Image (cartoon, rainbow, N blue to C red; front, side, top):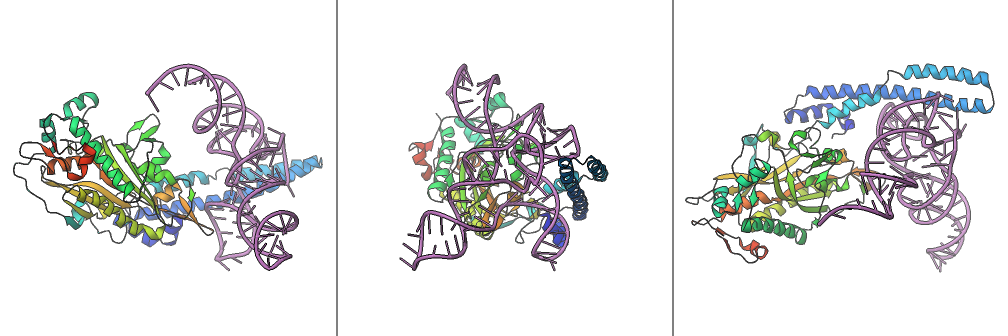
Length: 421
RNA sequence: GGACAGGUGGCGGAGUGGUCGAUCGCGUCGGUCUCGAAAACCGAAGUACCGGCAACGGUACCGUGGGUUCGAAUCCCACCCUGUCCGCCA
């Protein structure tokens, strides 16, 4: 959500920001007009209301004095003012303005390169080089051959885009999640959180998935299943005025994520790359405005640490204007090399949302007499389902078994290799 | 799910139709007193929005949304939330 006062003050800069996002700059004029209409109606109604308040007070006095003539005269005046007030509906005008504002994405950081789609993204650095493993198989082929990954049964239970993991692969998923969460909570200063997986609309609105992206969400009754733990974790400070976060508040959670993947029909239908349900470790930071840029770098390094420790090949991408998410001002994606698929795939996304989400959820801190909107950041640390894929494809052996990465063995009961049961 | 009881300012707690944004207490902040502190006393303090360079003025806010009324914290309706008991349950 944008500050309408900033838009008023800097309409040209705002229009330019919209253009970078590929939006029609005429939208800026539409917003300006909606704002002017609302303010005009507000001023008129408040003036009329002030008049009414004064008259009502006098009626009270007249009644006490038992002055019936005066009371009747005042009542007549009230009727006039009330007639004047009819037809003024600033609330409706404000709702229209808010609707326009709520649909606007965040303004982009100057660092963000121009570009319409992922081809405009910029690789910043990489760790390791893509390896070609002769005869490399994809994770689903490996998993099914091991008898530990079952898409057919999942489809029978739930439909497409679900999977049943068994035995050592089920355990590997659990090990990855536990290990990552332990890493961030024990070494990277994050506080472990176990949040609700069902939240109400206002919560999803706060992080920006609503109202624009309702189609991507699953709904249970009136509540929404979280598409990422970013939603409940960021909203921990919603509607709050917290003490000044001199050091950032850092939250981490391991949760399932639920996504309808409405726009992804026919994409990544094979394997468990794109599922309706997957596990993810999410990192969220709440900072002061002046700290968010540094925290963004730190958070991204925390995610990279996971990939490095797993011995995966990865690279950091700076997303361009067209690829940066709705709520984000600047996003780094981490992509991991999948030897089986022979492709880079996103495994983490770290975003600085600045005060965009904070405005939507009214999250502030006190600095002197001022209430200042916090900055919010979120990043995957990392997606467990995709980490599982990357580990399987990277550590596959010619006989179809999978070597367990060193760091995960303590979480695997010492298991070194996943073979057929 | 059922039955009661509640939701008022940072907290506690008054207020059942008219100068109520709201008595009072605690806590907070400033001052007097003190070598300093405590106590006591005096005083100040809510949030948001609109207009204004500002001083300041206006409006709204007593869980949320409607309604009745010239006028609602107060009356009516719906909803949400909390507590207690019962039922069910991991």
